[in-house]
Length: 262
Length: 253
Image 1 (cartoon, rainbow over the protein chains, first blue to last red):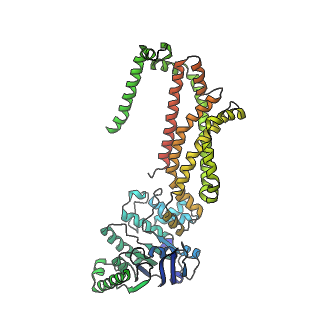
Image 2: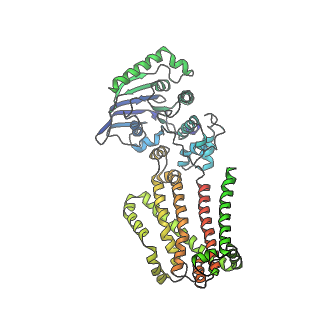
Image 3: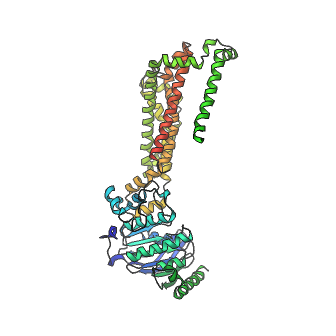
């Protein structure tokens, strides 16, 4: 993707999480996590509510320091370095209502001091590929849920960071739109592979979009199973998710999830 | 249809009230009820001709009062914003100065009016100070509340998009605070004329309140009513201007 060109360091994109624990006061949310994400692969995190998935993403992005253990993004452990390498896509799209879709998408470029016209031009080039051409000038409240999520994802990609942290990006959408958006995101990642960590409460979504899926236990979250996805981001989603290998992986994940919730 | 009703109906009500007043004033019913001389109760027609006949005098005094209101309101808004910004950035400053702001707000304007007159004379400044004192607080409180209403998730999102503290302030906090600021501005715009009139009452050599006091003493009752009509128009225009500015600036709501 053009907007990210130059900012990406192929070798440095991997994420390494070692012995990571985090507690809010007395409340331990994640305990002793070891996870690694190879460059250009997508790691899924599924787990029951409150198992620290979102906290983990915040730590990954350098928005928080862990209580114990280490997180390295592209070999760098410092929070500022992690913040510089990760782009965070929150559960709610968090489009700023006072900006048009185009100005929202161009936020990262503007934040780096690029002029408004140039930032808008560069972000605008991607609207066609994201299927939202013609909506550049629309304010977020004029866009459907699916379109808002596309703009939010575009905003994340335009930041040109090597690692994407996706926090239940489609949780707020209805089932049909969510399936469409999963296919769309799979296509976008096929075209432009990125290192990503995707948090989801939906096993099927995680197994379809990710290369590997880590199942976390109830709080304090620890990894109870790690599964290889049979056909990550396949072009034919319906065929992929009804394939026996996929169904088996899904069953294994659901069993692990149930074990871990006890 | 609905829009027409919302304009036509209130106009009809106002016209009916003015008509009733015209009848009751010209046949002396009000004066009789109050047990006063009939010339002390001007009819709307008399007020209308007083407005027209004294237009130069009224305009001169309106301009004096309007200037007091606008300069005072401007100073109050500026002070409110300038106090809110550092208080947003530093909890130390907020803890240190917010009680002082509340204390300044609690100063009884009626009591310090005469003192300001002694210190600053009959000119515009005592009026400006009183209006500013009365209007800075609503601006300060609403602006501060607006700035603090920022969505913490939006701030996190901006940080991962390489936003500096300043960029977060300009692109997230200020727009978040604007609707609240305008609520404060509308309150301030409603208070300012009242305080300006009070300040003129304390001591002034011109202005609409000066005019009203003088005319009342000389039993020029129609001109008093004419000045009141002008003041109503000024108040309505100020509020309408604040509302218009809000619509133009907060266009995403």
